[in-house]
Image (cartoon, rainbow, N blue to C red; front, side):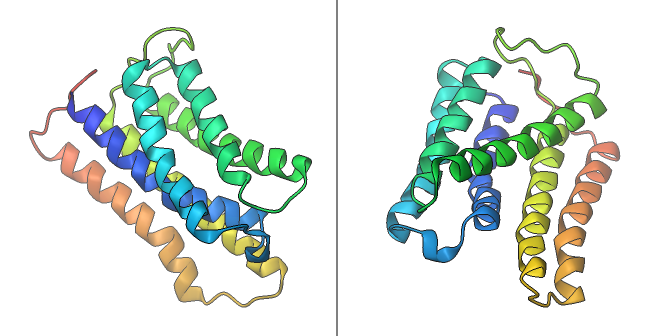
Length: 184
């Protein structure tokens, strides 16, 4: 198991937070069926996606596993089939778009959906997850703005500031230290 694999697993668990924010943006709290069961599904998401990642590690299989897991989570909300599909599709689109931008920014363009994953850029993984978290917070709070709920400026500063500061700190640490990255 490489350092990248460990980091990937940790961020699979971190994904529970931003997935919850995305789902809050699409579904109201009154639409939840059983909150305890929902949190079990959020916790099962990183376990399931990590098992698929270690078992097969083909990008196309990982994509399918993520979409399936998101759809199962969406089943715990009372919503129409099309609202569920829209929520899963838009959530997944945000995740994959940010991942693609970070992969391109780290000069990793030659991926194949049918080859075992070879991406091993830890800073890219960290930046992707922090940007996804920040995007989920923005999307979730935009819903509140639409309902005319006032959002303090301090909260907006934290929404943008914490991920951006974290990204900058990680990049500085990696730039000014002798830390080597483990390539898968």
